[in-house]
Image (cartoon, rainbow, N blue to C red; front, top):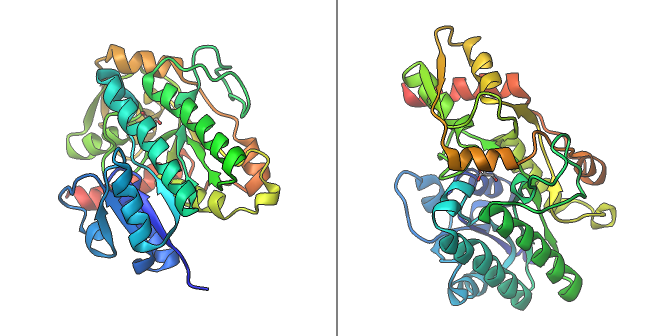
Length: 319
Ligand code: SER
């Protein structure tokens, strides 16, 4: 049987720029269609090394046209606004994150596609247990981004229960990576700190020194996404919205780790009240034992290995 193709929305974002080549490597370049609302510069590997389509996820007809044109069987739906951006424009966030997801699910129902939906630690709020937050617990977030992710998780469950769609997903913590920069998230400090450490030897952090949030390094993000989509459905009790985590850090702890390699590195703090409030409402750490038990989640990068790799890759890139 002819293999169906894969569509990646938000393919020019922090995760998409790396997930697209990763999927093309697994399934062959011509079978993975990258899409985004606009073309941005500097991502030729995504736009030129395989099919690329302009798809605005707020426009159902553009999604359906792409599904039809390329005979899509699976959608990795990454198009989303992040938490800090959402607080400055909640309506824009709702349009992209909620209406966009709704459009994707409706199109997936019509064209019988499987869907990967990345959720977030943002589904948790001040009422959730803050340490080793369990898989199944209170999800009453206070950010609009978190609200969209909880509603998104539920909508995905609904489409699975009502229409039998195969929809799976992970609750990512902060994502650390070195290809495309994250845009407008609360956890962005953990990426920016590496760029500034290499370029200027110091970093001014917008979160407090002791703000504990879990992180994950991009190679584990990519592996986890494909692993959950290819997992044996018989073994999946949750299917969607799995807690995943790899590294528990604060800005202070990450700065100490960086000093091991850049001895003169200094960090100072200039707190952004909006992002600090979001960070304070999120868990200090996650319990990802359901992902480990149900489909073998086993991240390869802890703090030390991630830091060494980030410094190695970025030193070459920035010099
Ligand atoms: N990295 C995201 C953010 O900070 C969390 O999912 O918004």
